[in-house]
Image (cartoon, rainbow over all chains, first blue to last red; front, side):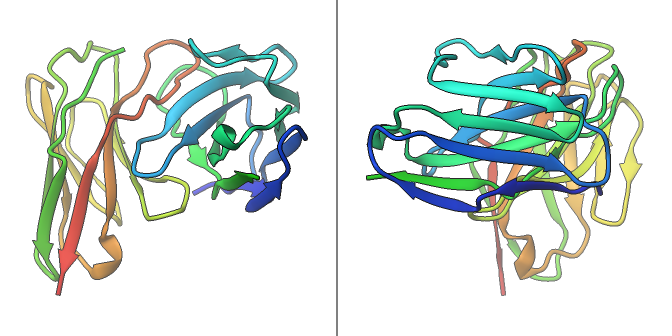
Length: 117
Length: 111
């Protein structure tokens, strides 16, 4: 399957600082990328959907000013957690798929574990 | 979005077939059934998907009932490395194609 790479794999930051996570599709063009968050022993929760060149669509309850998403190219999307707090500590996962309707599968990155201290 | 129901956990003996059920009684005609799995602390891995016909690939088989209200993922010869959380997802029929994850089934393959 296609490869989606996230960077960094893990990060520790201090409260009040911002952290940027990158998601790259390495061998295909991703018209649409998704960002998820996963707390321990829970399922993945969709945070937002981003389409290249347009504003992201956030799921209900997700603060768009806190979780900034940029999808400036067909191979790169970034998630910036602004003014991070310990409760933002989580496993963040991106996925990417090619565009259009139909049955194209989405491919996932390996995830980024964020710890805010 | 259509919802899915899966048993929270299952055990399977190594080398035997693992059959993971999923109910999706509210699925609409143009929605696909997708299966992903997540091994601890990794991103989900795509397994297989289907619309109405049974599907098979190198990883698994997907059996979809004729009324499409349920499906079964079959791992023909489970190994210890197949221990994971398995998610059955009905794909959003809008153009975004977002995947909404339920709680999944934790499959424990035992020696």
